[in-house]
Amino acid sequence: MQIPNLIRNFIRKRIVSECILLPFLYPDEGEFESFQEGYRLASRKTGEKLADDAPGQWRKSWRVIARNGMDDPFFVDFALGDALSVYFAYHGAGLWEPIKVADDIVKFEKILIALAALEAPCSLEAIAPLTDLNNEFYRELADDYARKDEARKEPGYKYFSIFIEDLRADKVKKLVFLKKFFEDGSFAATQDRTQNLPLCVFNGIEELALPLQDKLASLGVKFNAQEISFSENLSRVKANLSKFRYHTPHFLKRINMKKSLLFVALCAFAGQLAAAEMPAACEEYKKVSYDFIDSMAKQAQAQGKKDFDVAATKKEFEADYASIKKMSKEEQESTCNQGIAEVKELENMLKMMGSIK
Image 1 (cartoon, rainbow, N blue to C red):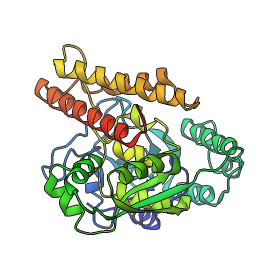
Image 2: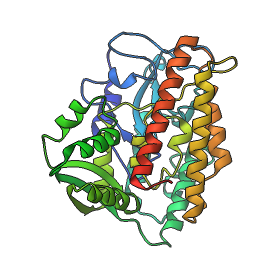
Image 3: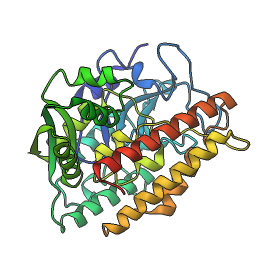
């Protein structure tokens, strides 16, 4: 497939800012089709297509050119020829509802460059001549910058990388922990990881780094924690995310997103669940998900955090839960069972890290 030169040049520039709502991941050279997996294609290997020109579905002519840190796509419509307006959509909302974010790719590039040059605290008036600040996407962006202004009044976050240097004696219990931590399919895979030390196991904020350090220390693991800058943390998380294609439920992606990109990576399970007369596994999935949300809410309350909206989070889960009405019963049951396993494993891991009780 021929990729227009304007699109190709835009992708090569890989414009990234510190805002997680803006483009964060771009397709690698020669991997443009693979980048469409989960949108137009279910799998490039099988050739199975998800696109359907019915209302609310991903259109056959849409192509993803970038994703933000929450896996929401920025895309263009190849059916329009050279009139390549740029669109954005929230993934996991049940329906694809495109929001136009630029009249063309050149204007979008100018907007991104202008935003990348801004230093918070600031307003978005600098990009007002380039776009409509009443646009839904840019309103959320403005809100994000406003929250950054508020955050500046509080102590800044510190970011750390943690590297395992030596497992030392009694490796079995350490491998058990690491298998859960990395969600490896086998102990052999976990053991392979530990053949190349030092092994990076964490990039993120200090409040999540500390319980992990405590856990590693209690296991007798020799490790090294290094303080890094925000930009270093961003680039390292980006490198990790680029290796995997996550379809995280929208409700989990919004949990504490501004504070922990690591949490996004850990919440990596599919949330496309169906409607009436669903298998018992799906009811169980709903229950464990609600229980998990309630646990997060209690922890946030105990820590004095007021930015966790339980009702809104559950509402977003409901949108995810209702989004696979077209799945077969067999697919529903398989997806729900996978969801149950992933939620429970995530919950257990966070308990082991001391992040929740």
